[in-house]
Image 1 (cartoon, helix red, strand yellow):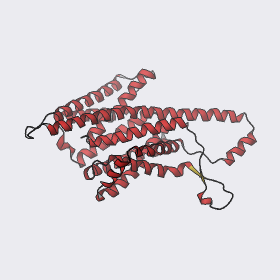
Image 2: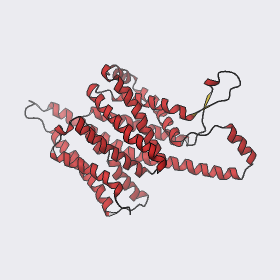
Image 3: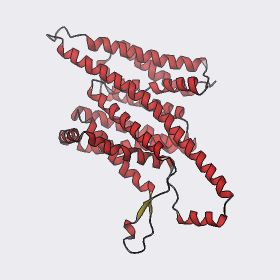
Image 4: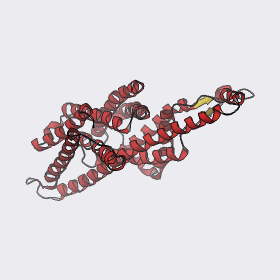
Length: 348
Protein backbone atom coordinates (compact mmCIF):
# COMPACT_ATOMS: atom_id res chain seq x y z
CA UNK A 1 0.00 0.00 0.00
CA UNK A 2 2.91 2.37 0.73
CA UNK A 3 3.97 2.10 -2.92
CA UNK A 4 0.67 3.77 -3.81
CA UNK A 5 1.23 6.84 -1.55
CA UNK A 6 2.72 9.04 -4.34
CA UNK A 7 -0.26 8.16 -6.51
CA UNK A 8 -2.61 8.95 -3.63
CA UNK A 9 -1.09 12.43 -3.26
CA UNK A 10 -1.41 13.04 -7.00
CA UNK A 11 -5.07 11.99 -6.96
CA UNK A 12 -6.05 14.13 -3.98
CA UNK A 13 -4.00 17.13 -5.15
CA UNK A 14 -3.92 16.96 -8.94
CA UNK A 15 -7.54 15.91 -9.43
CA UNK A 16 -8.72 18.57 -7.00
CA UNK A 17 -6.85 21.33 -8.83
CA UNK A 18 -8.04 19.94 -12.16
CA UNK A 19 -11.72 20.19 -11.21
CA UNK A 20 -11.23 23.71 -9.82
CA UNK A 21 -9.68 24.85 -13.11
CA UNK A 22 -12.41 23.05 -15.03
CA UNK A 23 -15.08 25.07 -13.28
CA UNK A 24 -13.24 28.29 -14.09
CA UNK A 25 -13.11 27.24 -17.75
CA UNK A 26 -16.81 26.37 -17.75
CA UNK A 27 -17.59 29.88 -16.52
CA UNK A 28 -15.37 31.70 -19.04
CA UNK A 29 -15.34 29.39 -22.07
CA UNK A 30 -18.40 27.13 -22.07
CA UNK A 31 -18.94 24.58 -24.84
CA UNK A 32 -15.21 23.87 -25.21
CA UNK A 33 -15.09 20.53 -23.41
CA UNK A 34 -14.23 18.47 -26.52
CA UNK A 35 -11.22 20.68 -27.27
CA UNK A 36 -10.17 20.61 -23.62
CA UNK A 37 -10.32 16.82 -23.51
CA UNK A 38 -8.19 16.64 -26.67
CA UNK A 39 -5.56 18.92 -25.11
CA UNK A 40 -5.57 16.78 -21.97
CA UNK A 41 -4.89 13.66 -24.04
CA UNK A 42 -2.02 15.29 -25.94
CA UNK A 43 -0.36 16.60 -22.76
CA UNK A 44 -0.69 13.27 -20.94
CA UNK A 45 0.76 11.35 -23.90
CA UNK A 46 3.68 13.79 -24.30
CA UNK A 47 4.52 13.86 -20.60
CA UNK A 48 4.37 10.06 -20.35
CA UNK A 49 6.40 9.38 -23.50
CA UNK A 50 9.85 9.74 -21.82
CA UNK A 51 8.88 7.01 -19.34
CA UNK A 52 8.46 4.38 -22.06
CA UNK A 53 11.43 5.37 -24.26
CA UNK A 54 15.02 4.22 -23.87
CA UNK A 55 18.25 5.30 -25.63
CA UNK A 56 19.11 3.24 -28.68
CA UNK A 57 22.56 2.17 -29.84
CA UNK A 58 23.20 3.73 -33.27
CA UNK A 59 26.35 2.93 -35.18
CA UNK A 60 26.97 6.54 -36.27
CA UNK A 61 26.19 10.01 -34.94
CA UNK A 62 22.89 11.53 -33.87
CA UNK A 63 22.86 9.46 -30.72
CA UNK A 64 20.52 11.93 -29.10
CA UNK A 65 17.85 11.09 -31.68
CA UNK A 66 18.23 7.36 -31.29
CA UNK A 67 15.37 6.23 -29.07
CA UNK A 68 13.33 3.07 -28.88
CA UNK A 69 10.38 1.81 -26.94
CA UNK A 70 11.15 -0.11 -23.80
CA UNK A 71 10.06 -3.71 -23.59
CA UNK A 72 6.28 -3.90 -23.31
CA UNK A 73 4.79 -5.79 -20.38
CA UNK A 74 1.06 -5.47 -21.10
CA UNK A 75 -0.92 -7.27 -23.78
CA UNK A 76 -1.63 -5.13 -26.85
CA UNK A 77 -5.34 -5.91 -26.99
CA UNK A 78 -5.69 -5.02 -23.30
CA UNK A 79 -4.14 -1.60 -23.95
CA UNK A 80 -6.33 -1.06 -27.01
CA UNK A 81 -9.49 -1.95 -25.11
CA UNK A 82 -8.54 0.27 -22.16
CA UNK A 83 -7.65 3.13 -24.52
CA UNK A 84 -10.93 3.11 -26.45
CA UNK A 85 -13.00 2.69 -23.27
CA UNK A 86 -11.14 5.51 -21.50
CA UNK A 87 -11.63 7.81 -24.50
CA UNK A 88 -15.38 7.19 -24.60
CA UNK A 89 -15.60 7.76 -20.85
CA UNK A 90 -13.49 10.94 -20.83
CA UNK A 91 -15.26 12.61 -23.75
CA UNK A 92 -18.71 11.68 -22.44
CA UNK A 93 -17.95 12.76 -18.86
CA UNK A 94 -16.79 16.20 -20.01
CA UNK A 95 -19.65 16.71 -22.47
CA UNK A 96 -22.30 16.45 -19.73
CA UNK A 97 -21.17 19.84 -18.41
CA UNK A 98 -22.83 21.33 -21.50
CA UNK A 99 -26.13 19.70 -20.46
CA UNK A 100 -27.02 21.62 -17.29
CA UNK A 101 -25.04 19.23 -15.06
CA UNK A 102 -23.18 21.10 -12.31
CA UNK A 103 -19.91 20.03 -10.69
CA UNK A 104 -21.59 19.07 -7.35
CA UNK A 105 -24.21 16.90 -9.11
CA UNK A 106 -21.45 15.39 -11.26
CA UNK A 107 -19.35 14.58 -8.18
CA UNK A 108 -22.33 13.04 -6.41
CA UNK A 109 -23.24 10.80 -9.33
CA UNK A 110 -19.66 9.62 -9.67
CA UNK A 111 -20.03 8.00 -6.23
CA UNK A 112 -22.00 5.27 -7.97
CA UNK A 113 -18.95 3.08 -8.88
CA UNK A 114 -18.61 2.11 -5.21
CA UNK A 115 -22.07 0.54 -5.24
CA UNK A 116 -21.52 -1.06 -8.64
CA UNK A 117 -18.21 -2.50 -7.50
CA UNK A 118 -20.04 -4.09 -4.58
CA UNK A 119 -22.69 -5.56 -6.89
CA UNK A 120 -20.11 -6.98 -9.27
CA UNK A 121 -18.17 -8.48 -6.37
CA UNK A 122 -21.31 -10.06 -4.91
CA UNK A 123 -22.75 -11.41 -8.18
CA UNK A 124 -19.63 -12.57 -10.00
CA UNK A 125 -16.73 -12.78 -7.52
CA UNK A 126 -18.52 -14.43 -4.58
CA UNK A 127 -17.67 -11.57 -2.23
CA UNK A 128 -19.71 -10.99 0.91
CA UNK A 129 -20.46 -7.72 2.70
CA UNK A 130 -21.49 -6.77 6.22
CA UNK A 131 -24.81 -5.17 7.12
CA UNK A 132 -23.11 -1.79 7.58
CA UNK A 133 -21.51 -2.02 4.13
CA UNK A 134 -24.87 -2.87 2.56
CA UNK A 135 -26.46 0.05 4.40
CA UNK A 136 -23.79 2.38 3.01
CA UNK A 137 -24.44 1.12 -0.49
CA UNK A 138 -28.19 1.53 -0.01
CA UNK A 139 -27.71 5.08 1.28
CA UNK A 140 -25.69 5.97 -1.81
CA UNK A 141 -28.43 4.57 -4.04
CA UNK A 142 -31.20 6.35 -2.14
CA UNK A 143 -29.30 9.64 -2.21
CA UNK A 144 -28.74 9.45 -5.97
CA UNK A 145 -32.37 8.52 -6.65
CA UNK A 146 -33.62 11.34 -4.41
CA UNK A 147 -31.27 13.84 -6.04
CA UNK A 148 -32.35 12.81 -9.54
CA UNK A 149 -36.07 12.92 -8.75
CA UNK A 150 -35.87 16.31 -7.02
CA UNK A 151 -33.70 17.83 -9.74
CA UNK A 152 -36.03 16.40 -12.39
CA UNK A 153 -39.07 17.89 -10.64
CA UNK A 154 -37.49 21.34 -10.50
CA UNK A 155 -36.09 21.29 -14.02
CA UNK A 156 -39.21 19.96 -15.75
CA UNK A 157 -41.53 22.57 -14.24
CA UNK A 158 -41.89 25.78 -16.20
CA UNK A 159 -41.30 29.00 -14.32
CA UNK A 160 -44.58 30.87 -13.80
CA UNK A 161 -42.84 34.13 -14.69
CA UNK A 162 -41.20 32.87 -17.86
CA UNK A 163 -44.16 33.49 -20.12
CA UNK A 164 -43.85 30.04 -21.68
CA UNK A 165 -42.49 26.61 -21.09
CA UNK A 166 -40.22 26.16 -24.11
CA UNK A 167 -36.98 27.09 -22.34
CA UNK A 168 -37.56 24.86 -19.28
CA UNK A 169 -38.63 22.00 -21.58
CA UNK A 170 -35.45 22.41 -23.63
CA UNK A 171 -33.31 22.52 -20.48
CA UNK A 172 -35.08 19.48 -19.05
CA UNK A 173 -34.49 17.44 -22.22
CA UNK A 174 -30.76 18.11 -22.19
CA UNK A 175 -30.58 17.58 -18.45
CA UNK A 176 -32.13 14.10 -18.86
CA UNK A 177 -29.62 13.37 -21.63
CA UNK A 178 -26.81 14.51 -19.33
CA UNK A 179 -27.99 12.27 -16.50
CA UNK A 180 -28.22 9.29 -18.88
CA UNK A 181 -24.70 9.92 -20.18
CA UNK A 182 -23.42 10.43 -16.64
CA UNK A 183 -24.91 7.09 -15.58
CA UNK A 184 -23.33 5.39 -18.62
CA UNK A 185 -19.88 6.86 -17.92
CA UNK A 186 -20.15 5.83 -14.28
CA UNK A 187 -20.88 2.23 -15.27
CA UNK A 188 -18.03 2.36 -17.78
CA UNK A 189 -15.70 3.76 -15.10
CA UNK A 190 -16.42 0.76 -12.88
CA UNK A 191 -15.81 -1.67 -15.74
CA UNK A 192 -12.62 0.15 -16.70
CA UNK A 193 -11.15 -0.08 -13.18
CA UNK A 194 -11.87 -3.83 -13.11
CA UNK A 195 -10.39 -4.25 -16.60
CA UNK A 196 -7.21 -2.44 -15.58
CA UNK A 197 -6.89 -4.61 -12.48
CA UNK A 198 -7.26 -7.71 -14.68
CA UNK A 199 -4.70 -6.29 -17.15
CA UNK A 200 -2.07 -5.81 -14.44
CA UNK A 201 -2.76 -9.23 -12.88
CA UNK A 202 -2.41 -10.91 -16.28
CA UNK A 203 0.89 -9.14 -16.96
CA UNK A 204 2.32 -10.08 -13.56
CA UNK A 205 1.27 -13.70 -14.04
CA UNK A 206 2.90 -13.83 -17.49
CA UNK A 207 6.13 -12.36 -16.10
CA UNK A 208 6.25 -14.95 -13.31
CA UNK A 209 5.75 -17.75 -15.82
CA UNK A 210 8.47 -16.30 -18.05
CA UNK A 211 10.84 -15.95 -15.10
CA UNK A 212 10.23 -19.56 -14.11
CA UNK A 213 10.97 -20.65 -17.68
CA UNK A 214 14.18 -18.62 -17.79
CA UNK A 215 15.50 -20.35 -14.69
CA UNK A 216 15.43 -23.61 -16.62
CA UNK A 217 17.17 -22.09 -19.66
CA UNK A 218 20.81 -21.25 -20.31
CA UNK A 219 21.85 -18.63 -17.73
CA UNK A 220 24.48 -17.05 -20.00
CA UNK A 221 21.93 -16.45 -22.77
CA UNK A 222 19.51 -14.95 -20.26
CA UNK A 223 22.20 -12.62 -18.91
CA UNK A 224 23.18 -11.46 -22.41
CA UNK A 225 19.60 -10.67 -23.32
CA UNK A 226 19.10 -8.76 -20.08
CA UNK A 227 22.17 -6.60 -20.78
CA UNK A 228 21.10 -5.89 -24.37
CA UNK A 229 17.52 -4.88 -23.62
CA UNK A 230 16.65 -1.74 -21.63
CA UNK A 231 14.67 -2.14 -18.44
CA UNK A 232 10.91 -2.15 -19.01
CA UNK A 233 8.86 0.87 -18.00
CA UNK A 234 6.47 0.65 -15.04
CA UNK A 235 3.19 -1.00 -15.94
CA UNK A 236 1.19 2.09 -15.03
CA UNK A 237 3.34 4.27 -17.33
CA UNK A 238 2.90 1.88 -20.25
CA UNK A 239 -0.85 1.69 -19.70
CA UNK A 240 -1.15 5.46 -19.29
CA UNK A 241 0.77 6.31 -22.46
CA UNK A 242 -0.86 3.80 -24.78
CA UNK A 243 -4.38 4.46 -23.47
CA UNK A 244 -3.98 8.14 -24.41
CA UNK A 245 -2.02 7.56 -27.61
CA UNK A 246 -4.84 5.30 -28.82
CA UNK A 247 -7.42 7.97 -28.00
CA UNK A 248 -5.77 10.96 -29.75
CA UNK A 249 -6.66 9.92 -33.35
CA UNK A 250 -10.28 9.35 -32.30
CA UNK A 251 -10.73 13.09 -31.68
CA UNK A 252 -10.28 13.71 -35.41
CA UNK A 253 -13.55 11.95 -36.07
CA UNK A 254 -14.92 15.49 -35.54
CA UNK A 255 -12.15 17.81 -36.82
CA UNK A 256 -14.47 20.75 -37.45
CA UNK A 257 -15.68 20.64 -33.87
CA UNK A 258 -12.11 20.74 -32.60
CA UNK A 259 -11.31 23.85 -34.66
CA UNK A 260 -14.51 25.65 -33.66
CA UNK A 261 -14.05 24.95 -29.95
CA UNK A 262 -10.39 25.96 -29.87
CA UNK A 263 -11.29 29.19 -31.69
CA UNK A 264 -13.99 29.95 -29.13
CA UNK A 265 -11.70 29.69 -26.09
CA UNK A 266 -11.51 33.02 -24.31
CA UNK A 267 -7.99 34.54 -24.17
CA UNK A 268 -8.46 34.83 -20.41
CA UNK A 269 -8.70 31.02 -20.24
CA UNK A 270 -5.56 30.13 -22.21
CA UNK A 271 -3.54 29.64 -19.02
CA UNK A 272 -6.41 27.78 -17.35
CA UNK A 273 -6.61 25.46 -20.36
CA UNK A 274 -2.92 24.61 -20.16
CA UNK A 275 -2.91 24.22 -16.38
CA UNK A 276 -6.01 22.03 -16.56
CA UNK A 277 -4.28 19.70 -19.02
CA UNK A 278 -1.16 19.53 -16.82
CA UNK A 279 -3.14 18.81 -13.65
CA UNK A 280 -5.08 16.20 -15.63
CA UNK A 281 -1.75 14.46 -16.24
CA UNK A 282 -1.01 14.56 -12.51
CA UNK A 283 -4.49 13.29 -11.70
CA UNK A 284 -4.62 10.43 -14.18
CA UNK A 285 -1.03 9.40 -13.40
CA UNK A 286 -2.03 9.12 -9.75
CA UNK A 287 -5.05 7.03 -10.69
CA UNK A 288 -2.94 4.62 -12.77
CA UNK A 289 -0.27 4.33 -10.04
CA UNK A 290 -2.88 3.56 -7.37
CA UNK A 291 -4.67 1.09 -9.64
CA UNK A 292 -1.43 -0.76 -10.39
CA UNK A 293 -0.59 -1.09 -6.68
CA UNK A 294 -4.02 -1.71 -5.12
CA UNK A 295 -7.40 -3.25 -5.90
CA UNK A 296 -10.18 -1.72 -7.99
CA UNK A 297 -12.29 -1.20 -4.86
CA UNK A 298 -9.49 0.72 -3.12
CA UNK A 299 -9.18 2.96 -6.16
CA UNK A 300 -12.92 3.61 -6.14
CA UNK A 301 -12.76 4.55 -2.45
CA UNK A 302 -9.91 7.02 -3.01
CA UNK A 303 -11.68 8.62 -5.95
CA UNK A 304 -14.85 8.90 -3.88
CA UNK A 305 -12.98 10.81 -1.15
CA UNK A 306 -11.53 13.08 -3.83
CA UNK A 307 -15.03 13.74 -5.15
CA UNK A 308 -16.13 14.70 -1.65
CA UNK A 309 -13.40 17.33 -1.59
CA UNK A 310 -14.37 18.54 -5.07
CA UNK A 311 -17.99 18.85 -3.97
CA UNK A 312 -17.07 20.90 -0.90
CA UNK A 313 -14.77 23.26 -2.80
CA UNK A 314 -17.24 23.76 -5.63
CA UNK A 315 -20.19 24.47 -3.35
CA UNK A 316 -18.29 26.96 -1.18
CA UNK A 317 -16.05 28.78 -3.68
CA UNK A 318 -18.44 28.90 -6.63
CA UNK A 319 -21.52 29.40 -4.40
CA UNK A 320 -23.56 26.51 -5.79
CA UNK A 321 -25.40 26.42 -2.48
CA UNK A 322 -27.68 29.13 -3.86
CA UNK A 323 -29.18 26.67 -6.36
CA UNK A 324 -29.97 23.64 -4.16
CA UNK A 325 -33.10 22.81 -2.21
CA UNK A 326 -33.05 21.17 1.21
CA UNK A 327 -33.92 17.84 -0.43
CA UNK A 328 -30.97 18.07 -2.82
CA UNK A 329 -28.64 18.95 0.04
CA UNK A 330 -29.85 15.93 2.00
CA UNK A 331 -29.44 13.63 -1.01
CA UNK A 332 -25.92 14.79 -1.85
CA UNK A 333 -24.65 14.68 1.73
CA UNK A 334 -26.17 11.21 2.21
CA UNK A 335 -24.52 9.79 -0.92
CA UNK A 336 -21.13 11.42 -0.40
CA UNK A 337 -21.13 10.81 3.36
CA UNK A 338 -21.84 7.10 2.91
CA UNK A 339 -19.06 6.89 0.31
CA UNK A 340 -16.58 8.55 2.67
CA UNK A 341 -17.62 6.32 5.59
CA UNK A 342 -17.33 3.05 3.68
CA UNK A 343 -13.51 2.59 3.98
CA UNK A 344 -13.74 2.65 7.78
CA UNK A 345 -16.42 -0.02 8.11
CA UNK A 346 -15.56 -3.57 9.27
CA UNK A 347 -15.14 -6.04 6.43
CA UNK A 348 -17.05 -9.30 6.09
